[in-house]
Image (cartoon, chains in turn blue, orange):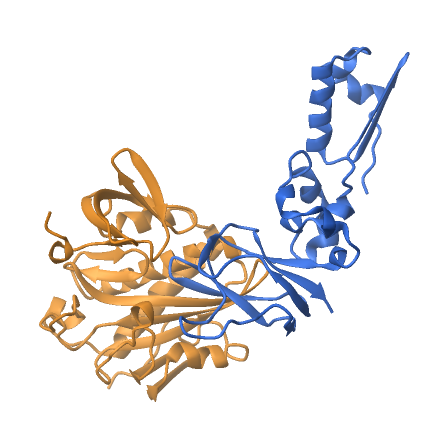
Length: 186
Length: 260
């Protein structure tokens, strides 16, 4: 978890921090700044004035509970910064119901689309799907095809585990980094 | 007979010529882990070759070039894979232009056209793990030594039709290997550069008024403005620019246009 305190020096660079009696707009601006910066807590203290801003959704919590912002499986530890940077203020919360804080779901990892294209669950029109909910899959196993420009890309799972949820309908368009499957890692 | 001796570094250096196979791409995929990058599998006859929309490619035995090429473009992020489609298509045009003066064009997304007829096509299949391209198998079919122009119901043409002569397929394949490798190494070393611009310049119907048909059957007049960074076709209709994925739109030829 990132935690930083703005020192007096850093604060001077921000107009809104110069005035000890901040108005609502300045505080809003500061909250926005904190959200963008990716830090989870800021304490600002001047004479007769103290302001503490905490981003409740800590980096780790986001990673495990919000499928939409989950980094690609193994990158979890490697790249926390971009994760924290983008989605703090209005993350796509719609995709993460309150119940997702449940301990079981906290373990789930998303397989995401590496490219813009069309998502196919089957290898061909009249074929069986590559995987179904409940299937145990192995690392390297093909889980779907993403097609773009008639380039057919077989997407292989980077982890072994059980398919918990399929997040996209067959033959629908997908965006870069869009979660496709939720996996309960083995 | 000419033996196959490409002057390349790796494309075609592993080479196998089969009389008959289900599909050269399927065969190559089976052995992809053990074969070197650049491996080419040529077949005189494919009885389950993949053509457009899953249609089986009907190739008269030994008359055409139907082969697959194995690449391992691990330097290429998955999100830029459409570049592979473009550089292969342009490489094929480079090579065929060494044999024919005809203006060769690319029909989005992956066909080669001459004189408004199909000279060949390609289909790329890759395996991705995360953002990492493990391998790409490129299936290519080119009409070479059999006249295709007279075949009813096919909007096809062959190199024979264009040049009035037959061609040694090995010689042709050597030139193709050379041009594909040049395009591939240039991309690897220099990045995309002008690739998209070059592709668009060769695009059939680029910046011309054409008739299009969309999935629900509706036809409209529009203009191809290019291809976006997801490989989608950009078509302008009145003042609106829209990006279409493969399968969402079809550019029609004269005889396919509904009479108003």
